[in-house]
Image (cartoon, rainbow, N blue to C red; front, side, top):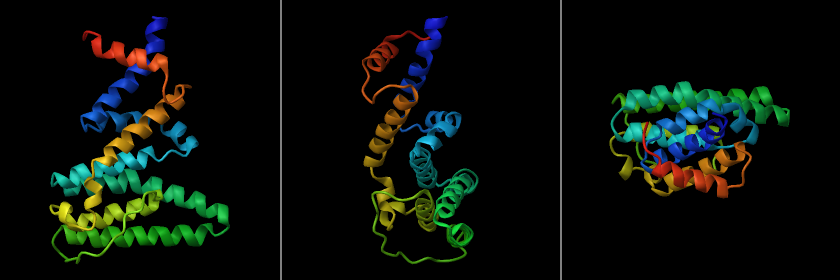
Length: 202
């Protein structure tokens, strides 16, 4: 039993890694929720990275209402929390946080109206940046709602790049191994992964 308890976390990580390879993000979302505090303490962007991909999947499949609900209930609160913490450190907390909240709310309203066909938003040039804050990424996701059903031909086409999946897989492995107290490449983890592939189902 003790051995099984020791191996279980590695098997869980291996299961999430395989799911990411198959572009199934639900196990990753569940894992992130379970380790939310530890990831936050590390300053990890994993939640934003996975959440962004999940949002893009929903949007690409025409599930606009679900995408909007997800971003408002799951990603917006975290982005606002991160913004308040960063702003507080500069001594301009109230003003910066209020400004950020207003910007996100305005973007969300415009995007939602456009997605519903109430308002046409012309394409605008957007230069993708390799590293965005959670709040900046949130604004991009909200803006992409205006191009639901035609994301590939929009200024947000980079949200569909396959390299994003590779980045998520690499980041998950880094965070997961760190929480297990292991380096990114661990002989023990490799053994568990190899054994997990050959282990018969119960």
